[in-house]
Image (tube, rainbow, N blue to C red; front, side, top):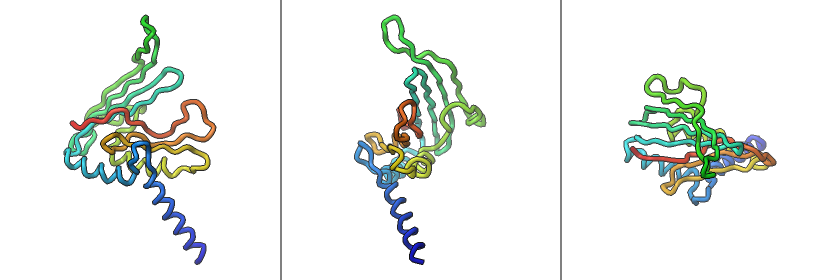
Length: 174
């Protein structure tokens, strides 16, 4: 019975700790989620966000998810390579792209999953914030408005393209 109580208390503390992780913005996961619930209702659950990935090797991708009235209405994907142009500036060269709407949404395997921000909060908590802190560096942050902007982890000692999670590079109310 004693061991059961200890286990129960330790699980409860871990869940609380996960919700209280705070990023550079100074806003905790729990506060951000509360803020999100308030502002999404004020904006009729209509928004878009872009998840970006860039590799050290020059390849990258962007997936833009559009949500109208609480439902994903479009997913747009771009896979690109960054190359130096004649002015020695990095330029993106498209390798592959698509746009999905209606029943097509989610039909391509490439790109970020067509998730609502609510689902990102849940995924953040269940898949990334619960990772062993001794073996990983855990990341959570919000934008200026308090909306989740990244969540994930990097395994200790990993050096190339190690981030597991998501980074929202752009968010807009529509």
